[in-house]
Length: 404
Image (cartoon, rainbow, N blue to C red):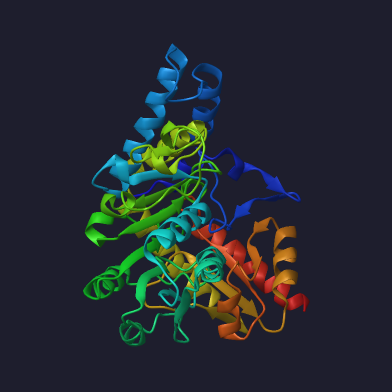
């Protein structure tokens, strides 16, 4: 059982006030707050072990390298990858998907080939594939959704043909909260000899993830979504694919030998990590993963499920409330509109009450078009949020509604 009051003590920012009101932070889908141990890890490494990794023979470099590679092993264990060679550090989910689009695209896709995505994708899982389409003539196909925000799995099963090369979908929608049936998606794709990449940005903080149990070919996520620092992310890929994919960027670290005539590339995982890595961020990410592991991902999942159920129940009682995303399997995200109140107006006025929510299209404009709207207000929860904060949100929405 989660002791939320004890957990909140680890997050100093949660005790601050905004406009004279206690902060109610409900924008966890955009980024999570950081526990003291993560910030301390960043400070400690800069002050005691800071040195560039891998190539130094001196003490500090050796220690920094040990921390960086230990972090890679921590990530491997956290998602149950088979080898640390399959863990590539990037700047985040967006860079990981761009790496995938470039490297997998260069190795395995040609003109006329098809990549399947879904209607609910974040722009970062749409635009890189469109850019690949411009470069190589690859086509994008889109899985439709129903009004509840669930994928049309029957239609998905009919989308495969001899041109299909990849399925790239979100594990959890950042707008609807829909938890997609990724295991079924992967199984269906593999039955057609098609690889699958899963965008785990919105799932990794909220539920246990086992890439081997899923049988995902690729899985990507960001550190800042799971209580770690910004600017660090993970690209997981099965070694059999990574061995055959060309590097995404060139420079130091990713080479074995360089001459003006020819360059040979480094072994995995360094082939995909050009330049000085964010070794401070990787260690802090490992601290964050150990922090949530100590709480328990199953416990986090159960607590947030109850919090979301409570919020849905309370918010549905608000007059003129429209909630977008009512899937049977739903994560801790609620996107909504109230009557004709513009999402920006609602978000701005809630902010004056100390309530931090997200407004806009949430980098998912095609999804907004599907529902015929410009944007929504989004409340997204973490394990440090409380039912009392939900009550404050509901009262705030009611207050704004009455103003209009």
